[in-house]
Image (cartoon, rainbow, N blue to C red; front, side, top):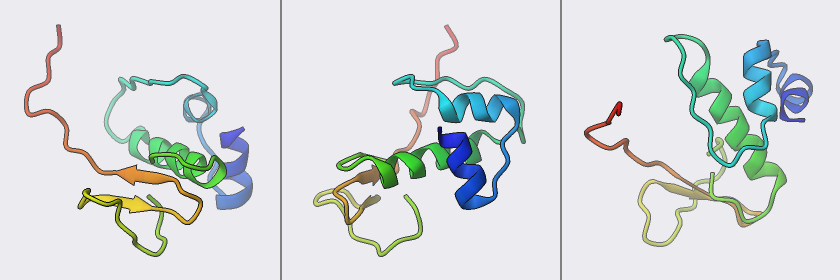
Length: 95
C-alpha cells in the first residue's frame, strides 16, 4: 500500500481520506475538497511511489535531472519512468 510506504519511508502519516487516495488503484482520480486538505502532497506522494516502484512510468522527485527528449518540463528516471509538468486548461467547465 502506498499509504504504508509513505509512513515507513517518509514518516508521512496520511489522514484517512489521504490514505484512501494513496491506496486507490483507480486510473483517474478527481479530488474535490477545501483548500489546505493535502491534495498536492497526496498526489505528489502517489506519483513518487509509482515512479520509484513501477518501471517505465510517466510521473518528479529530487533526483538528477534528465529531460525526456522534446519535453522541456520533464524528468526521466534511471528506471525508465518519466514525469511531465503540464499546465491546466485556461478554461475549466463545471458542467
